[in-house]
Image 1 (cartoon, helix red, strand yellow):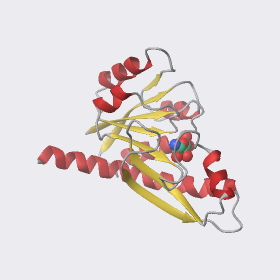
Image 2 (cartoon, rainbow, N blue to C red):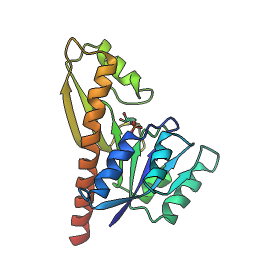
Image 3 (cartoon, protein in one colour):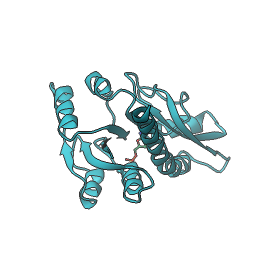
Image 4 (cartoon, rainbow, N blue to C red):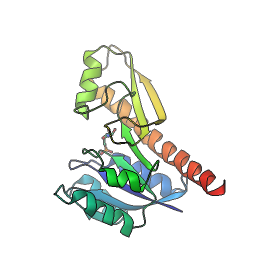
Length: 196
Ligand code: GRF
């Protein structure tokens, strides 16, 4: 069974981490969340401990890339899911798990992606542009922000009643559906690779 590591950000709420872990516990996805990595203690880490998922705290330092790779290798991780991770993932990690790293972004990429486009910045920009729809994207991770091949997108409409906050809530609800589905697709893709 594929072992998944979830990388969260410093202020991680961990709601995507929870939805991914739940999908594995429920056997909707044939994988196990073997590790959660965070730069510091936060809500996501509290939830991981509650679920009995091993946790590693790793903050940015000069040898961050090597330290992260060491952890990924030690836990025999097959798949990485970024969920609120704020840095560009180091190149050595992408080379270690090519095509096996996913990220979730709260917009319909390629719109509203890239550096600086995170959290409420995204929803505020969408609101300011009077967009009539938004959504989320799960994509494979490459060396640019929010740029790899798209695995799944889910959309919602924006009405004149919406505010940046209500758009954020609608999109987050979609994220919790999209991420487990995308992880399932990736595990199936990896099984095919193994058979052929
Ligand atoms: C999500 O909105 C995700 O799209 C973005 O970071 C946020 C993480 O939220 N990459 P949570 O910590 O999973 O609740």
